[in-house]
Image 1 (cartoon, one colour):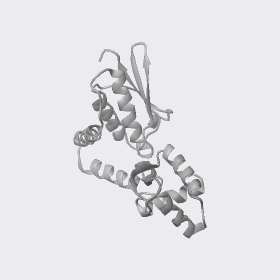
Image 2 (cartoon, helix red, strand yellow; image 1 turned 180 degrees about the horizontal axis):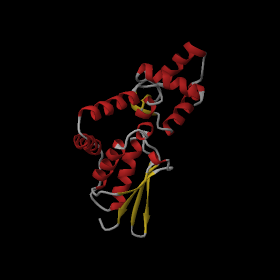
Image 3 (spheres, helix red, strand yellow; image 1 turned 30 degrees about the vertical axis):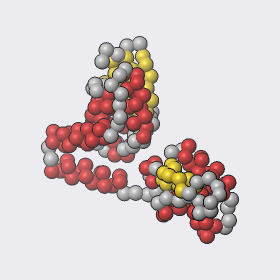
Image 4 (cartoon, helix red, strand yellow; image 1 turned 90 degrees about the vertical axis):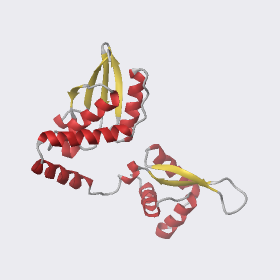
Length: 210
C-alpha cells in the first residue's frame, strides 16, 4: 500500500477517530508538512477500498466553513494490522476436537453460523433480491461474493475465504460456511467447489424451484 495511506491508517488506529486536520498534524509531527488536499485524496481512495469510513461531522471552531468529517477505520481497515486471530481460532478448534465429539462440534458451528446470519437484513421476496442481499452481507464479512443465474437455478460464489489457512487443516470451517449460507438463503445449497481444494473460488448451486 502507498506509504502515506499506510501512515493515515496507522494514525486512525492510534487515535480512534480523526479529522483531516488531526491527520495533517500527526503526519507533520512524524514526517513533515502535508496539505489537507493530499490527505483528502488519500482518504477518498481508502474509503473506496473499504478501509476508512466517515462516522460523523464536527462543527469547526471558527464560525465560518463547512463541518469537518470525522474518519475512523472499518473492520477491513483494522484487519490491515497484525493480529493473533488465526492462532486463536486454530487453538480453539484444536481444543474442541480434543475434548468434544464431532457431532457436538458441528452443533456449536451451526450456532456460530446462526449468529452470523442473524446480523443480516434479508428481503423475503424473490430469490434474486435475496441473493443480492446475501452477496452484500457476505462481501461485508470478507468473502467477496457474487452470484449468477443459470437455466435451472443460481450459483453463489465466494471468491475469498476468510479462513483460507485454517480451511486447509480442517473441513469444519467449510461446514460452518455451508450452514451460514443455508441460513442466509433459507435453503441448503449444493457445494460445487471449494477454495480449500485449490479451486479459485467456492461455489454453491441453488435450484430455481425454491
